[in-house]
Length: 206
Image 1 (cartoon, helix red, strand yellow):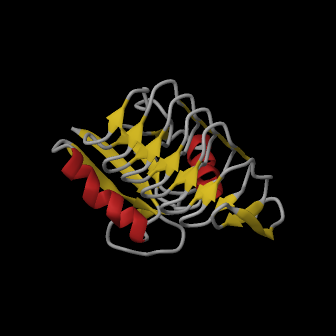
Image 2 (cartoon, rainbow, N blue to C red):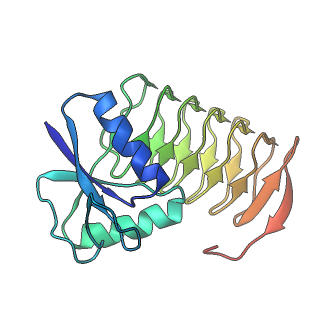
């Protein structure tokens, strides 16, 4: 039996709670920790609940910066970060030891891929060889990332976007749904279209 505690009891957290037992019959969700959503299964607040020492913690938030921030709070209290790896995925790189990593559904991770903490890869995403995913990256469903691409910290890639080989995407950038990224993307911008062009600039930390 493998125990989990899920940080954040919103819609995504409830999805993860439903998927974990479907991935392995021995997976057990002990409950949630959440600062704002009272519910029957909420064990308490992130900073004050009694740490479950024999459970792995997963931060179930869609935003990478938020996953890192909550994860750091839990780590500072002695929580153990887990990894969620869907058994139906295709993995040519070892993702089983990525702290706070979640690899969902039928995702595909090719060879020699580097993956940072708190990365989220949704179902049907395809990650090519020699790709770097820095910590806090969010890869949505049906995304393609070509070989040798480098995806910076806290980048969000929305569904059906494609990033061509060897492209670098700067920290905190947002790739719009369905975009085709053919050249490097600066940090802290939103790009959209085919080919993708900058449509918004945002401050660091937004």
